[in-house]
Length: 430
Image (cartoon, rainbow, N blue to C red; front, side):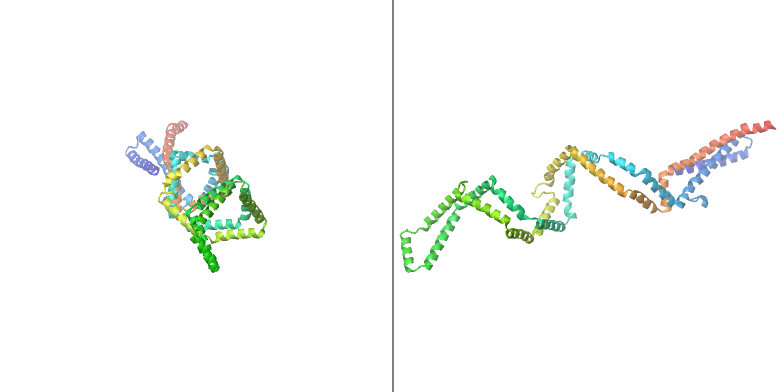
């Protein structure tokens, strides 16, 4: 039973008791107790009706009475403005919000909330859910296009020659270059020792023979045939000899004191120094590098790779085919533990959050009042009445109940004063 119904029940009971006692007093007019009850109930009924009228007059016109009733609908503009001013200047004033924000530890609340939900396990689940849903919300076309545009713009801004020549000069003077050269020479040695190189040398010698015979005279062809028949010209042995000589040359190049190796490094240094100063060479390198990137189908490659990644994520797999959660969980755990241990970072983030919120409050504090005002203005008169009754209706109905109670008490006091003080006083004066 709500309080309005209780107040109506109380008023109805008082009214019925007043009718019943009045009828009984009419039948037995001499009974003192009946006169007392009628007087008290009459005062209680008057108090209850008066407070019912007053409370009802706040929202509507009781019994159709038009004068100074329906106060809330009649004064809705002033009421709404008053509520807005109260919210802006008292309930949610700038100074109060500032004080709350300045002492609020955002990251501490975030850490506690995540700890309750399972810490890194919870974060990994949320991240996997987010990544798995990206394919349905994100097309690879636009990200690939934007990423390609960004890369192309950065490449066009990049001055490669200013970086590559100093890098090569530094590399030549460091031990890493000799190590790199030794590794390449070792690869070349393995390749030169193979049967493919022997076959290529042999093919070259035979082609050379054919060209010499084709351009030579009868005597030259005859002599060459005699030498070959007598095994004076053996191309297999010649190819073996050339290959062996090539292998020995490569092995000698691996020695840091090798003259050819030293000469090679010296010539490289000279050419790099020359290219570094030569404007034409630098321009050709820049243009060639940029032209290469312009002609590369980079956007299609990026789009294809992003489609593959998004499809894998949607299926709960990483790019390596593993479980997506198993792949991201170690990174999430490392990230989360690092943040928890880094109190300086937490304080920095708190300061950032606080500064951002303070700026928002400073610039947009008026929006609080505007939102309150717009929300209340959208309500009809009946909706505004219900809104206020929902918030203060119980207390207002208690006013009605108290009116009946206080009226009855005052009626009892007045009855006692009239019958035991005022009337005896008048009789004494007579």
